[in-house]
Length: 301
Image 1: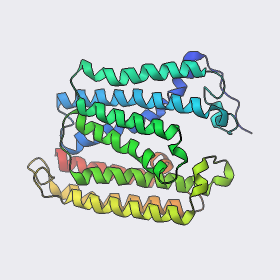
Image 2: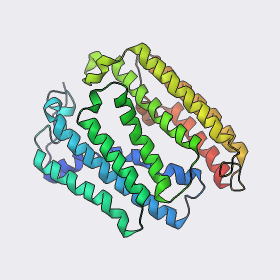
Image 3: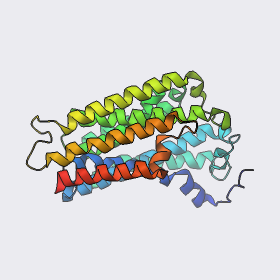
Image 4: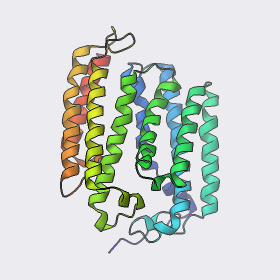
């Protein structure tokens, strides 16, 4: 039997509907400054922090709009029915009003610090794509994968444009297809558990073979483009005096092993999603820490 819903007042209900746990995804904003060796620059820290807050506000606005639209379906879902709007603890009108305020905050906050034209464009793309996703794109196979993956890519790219950091085309490719890899892996996990409560309509459009092929393709592109990024020798690439190449090139090893581990987990009867592995699996977490340590040594030591 499912747990009884938690009784929440308006403030707690709104705080819950903002999904602050999901703000962890906005940590991707620091990837570009860290990879460029500029994470300790005062202006970069200020701009990156502002971009992080902007995406937190924009993402929460999207979650509120999504929950308003999905409230009827959420009420018959075994766990989503406890979301604040579906449970009747936050009115749709209050949620929409809060979403509008958050979007205004997201697009005005940077003005207090600098004139980030590029960040505005990335934010506008993020909001437009996810509104399109909420209003129907999530039921279109393949395109819905790209829409969800774009959220990860745009977060990472926002960290670069916020401080006008030049980024390699291979770096952007790794982020793009890495995001697609994670999304496809999640869909594969959901399809495995479709008989145990998964209600995403678009799952009916996918077969295990298709998702396996998509997972393999995206993993291949991630590994290939990461190799090209790590061995990049063009001007502005990694072969500069501020980077020590050997640890960065060695970081290829944990990347490949982590991808293989995720693919193996997706093929098991449990169908573990990449998101679950990142949060709970010690092997994947250890490989992630090794990768981060090698990059730190290569870029900052």
